[in-house]
Amino acid sequence: MKNPWASKPWVGRYSSVDSSAWTSELQKEIGYDFKLAQKSDDGLFWICWEDFLKFFRCLHVNWCPSLFKYKFVTHACWPKSLGPVSDKFFVCDNPQYYLVMSEAALRKKSSVWILINRHSTENDLIGNKTEETSLTAHIHRLTKEEISSRIVYPNPTKIINGIYSNNPLVMIRYDVTAQDKHLAIILSQYKKFEDISYTISVYSTDPFTFKPAPSFLPNNFKLKGQFDPSNSGGAVGRSSSYFRNPQYKLEVKRDTKIEMLMKVGSSLSINISVSEAVGRVNDLSNEVFGSGSYRTAVGYCR
Amino acid sequence: MIDDRLPVDRHYNPLCSHTKSKTHFECWVPLIEKAYMKLMSGKNGYGFIGSNSGFDLFSLTGWLPERVFFSPTNNAKKIKDHETTSERVWERLQSSHKFGDSLMTAAVSDSISDEQADSVGLFTGHAYAILNIKQVSEPPRNKWLYANSIDVSEFAKKNIYQPVNALHTFFARAGSKSAFRANEESMGVQTLGWAVLVC
Picture 1 (cartoon, one colour):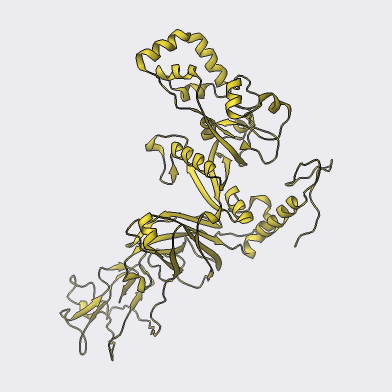
Picture 2: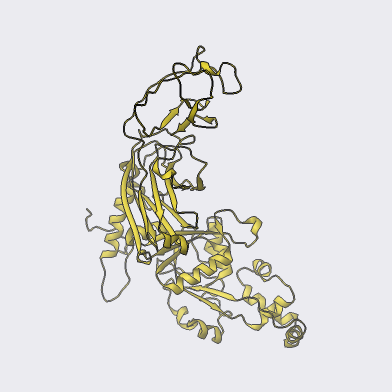
């Protein structure tokens, strides 16, 4: 090993002061001249593995990027205003990227390395931050159908949970399996409090495509409502007043794709149900689609 | 943008990265360091958030930084989820070194006290470069120890700074070649594994 100061080396076992360790056979095997090493201190030393394990904790290995034949790089910004402070309940506002692996990559179980380099900000330089950005990325495994839309729920499709870190660099190594044709990379902040910009780089030994997840469908309509005593009907199947819940009429002129997203500002459990009806819905016999199980703070269906 | 002023001590020794070549002074080294510190750190100096040898090498070279956390033990129950076993780390180190296309660095454990580190010539929070890795055969005296089921690592712990001498002494006390031979005959040739040296 070398102390980059080029002086002050290790003085324990197998150091240049441990004369009993350096038999002539060992010196020959290693290619080390004990007498020469004693004469000058250049910060170079040998240490045995057991001592390395005892005294060192973290190992960094930097790899030549040309080991990976396929590479994709993109730069983006995640403004503070986009999405909630915490993405505990829904991740649809987070930056999302879809990674589609080639057949060759699936067959060879290639490694994919994803590197997210957060750009330093004025705040980082001034050094008087009271909070620190803590960033990571999670990996989700999707079906072919799922990649036509964004991911809303944080958990059901997740396969790798990233570790939040204030380190400006997030690195994820993943060895793809036969099931990993469609993967999603979702950026996540522990507690969002500032605009961040970043560079995301993807490396693999085999071909892949990498692109931002699609947006929600382009023609959208938003409205705000509220639960109050007159329209809080309770959960389906558990309350006879279920059909008092807020209902909205959606008129569809021709075959089309529809997505519905509902968010509530509290930890209320909600769902969405869509039925074919004239006037108010009074039973679920004509239900067309819905968001399924009740979920905290968010419901989504398409 | 940086100027060309560099910090020195009162004897004009540079207090920054520099080369020690006697024939020519390569001035780009401290200048790059100064520019990097200015870009990354502002007023924070060397302790900027996220600074570690892997990240800094990535910033300066673009070589992809992999971070390997390891536990000093191979006891499966004590190894945390994000940690790699020390055996596996050794294999990775060897293959990375053999492969050639990697730069390896390691930081001194922060669970070691400053005094403890100082007594063996190391510095806490400091990163070292790993330049060479060799696996060498163990001298026969340790085979004897292994055959008698003496835990060498336990033994070494108690004699951490003079273990090699201690082994010599122990072996001299414990016996002779005949003891070793006897074991070789009854138990077959045992190997301790290897004494592994990292440079």
